[in-house]
Image 1: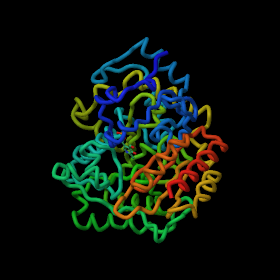
Image 2: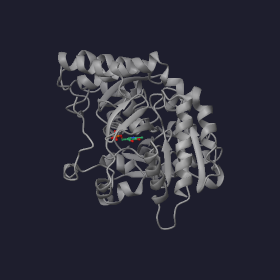
Image 3: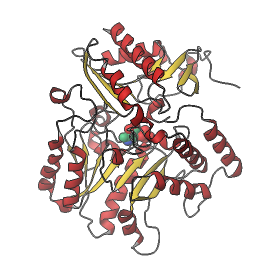
Image 4: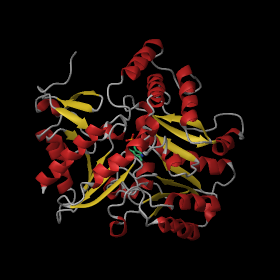
Length: 443
Ligand SMILES: Cc1ncc(COP(=O)(O)O)c(C=O)c1O
């Protein structure tokens, strides 16, 4: 077997432009992973790294699952590719049917994409087209949220609320977008266990936006049940339901971006179920194939789907990708769902949540820790920033964790954890011990 090895030279690193990475720093001191199995990665120099973030919130069933590899390999031997426009193949229909079975009630049709970003842009386009199909074509405004992350397409960064992801393209963002305020309030909610108490009223800002523009102009609200990439922002109690109520009041679609919260991260299969909030459209990716083949999906409810099926006969939605429902991805998705079901992984986070929460809150009191927040198998650990150097402290902790054998995620001065859902208690202990040691060393 050949693998990338420790022998990669500096010049070997040159051609690849790494995403969301300080390339020059990285290439001066690269971190190269060559192998993964279960809860672990191994580096080019043979070090074992405990995966504290399921790769990038996606490897929910753990690494190297033979059942998925074999299903993909079998599929590629039988049918490597089929055009998704005007043609179909069995695994595409099978996966759609299986997804609908695990999806929140009422979400009964699936549009396949290749990533979370594509799912988001697809969902926004469906929302706009839906209103138009029903004779409400004036509903063109989209509402996102400050600190929301919805991928990196122009639609996604426009409804997203992370300033560095928008800054350079500020003049090119799609028009007609408003943002709800974010819900992060450390003064009131620091060290909350589970959902914070304060902040449901922030949903009422949607009333202000509706009053400003008139409901007849508003198409959809898109939010993450738990905002992940902006640093783990857990919805205050009652907040999501309030957003839903206001959407219902004014005929606005609610898109839940479940790219991170989908497939068991919160303790339920989907955040919509965990927080008991009905979505019209749900965006998925990541855990859908356990991260091993790129794939995304958009779930829509009957009302959304039916409006498209009532118009003149012909193509109902002028949208799709060369690799929508790619046979290999469908095979990976089917095998992944099998594993989730047979191993009970879609609810396992709920069983471990209390243990996880206690381990997380034991970090309180360590140097520079200004917040610990948790939900399901998610941790957000916020550190006091070094004045004038936002992100430097958490980046140092990230590096120190990696040196000590744990992969964590860093955004600004927040460290996030979201391990594969197969994690065992001793591995949780080891993850938090490593983080604690790194925090002390970084102080
Ligand atoms: C909530 C959410 N939406 C969309 C995306 C974008 O997904 P991708 O990187 O697959 O395009 C992400 C990625 O982290 C995400 O967390």
